[in-house]
Length: 182
Image 1 (tube, rainbow, N blue to C red):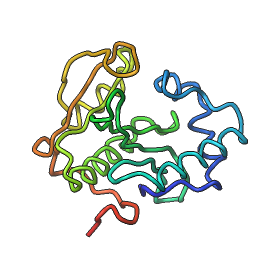
Image 2: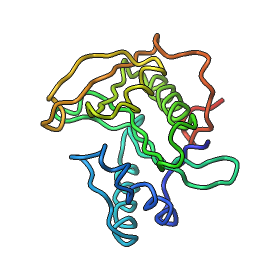
Image 3: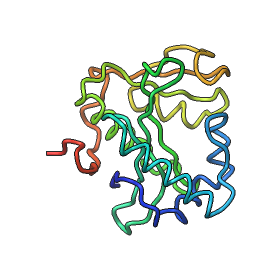
Image 4: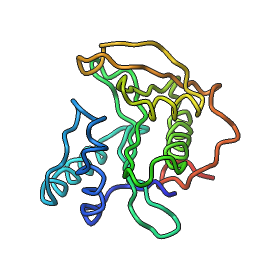
């Protein structure tokens, strides 16, 4: 897979992810299901604009499958409210591509990017019923940090990853320009 910046031309494929109720049910309350193509284009414009002003490692990226260059999802490193001190790692894939290793590959690429920018720890915020996401973060070295209602005003499970926890055997993904790929 390749992580790259979003483009307006990605709107149709992005709608396949962010317009899918199976995906967005796990993103509430921070994001609702995108209803149509014009709304997806508008959201992509917003993300592109925000990313242009973001200070690395914060950002949003398109996940593109290398074999056929298809857009299969999105990835994020975003500051968590309140206070914007904690950094959350996230990924959103089309349900047809769940359990194919793309979430793990994305997580490792983003963690490596964040840790090269002197981030001390990353968090994954998981809704209690999202068994698949909880399993993915645990399998990839994230440690249970408890439950909290600190973020988004609802009870969530919190997982943490520190540089020393990062599995050195992780496959390396292609990274967008500026990610520091060697």
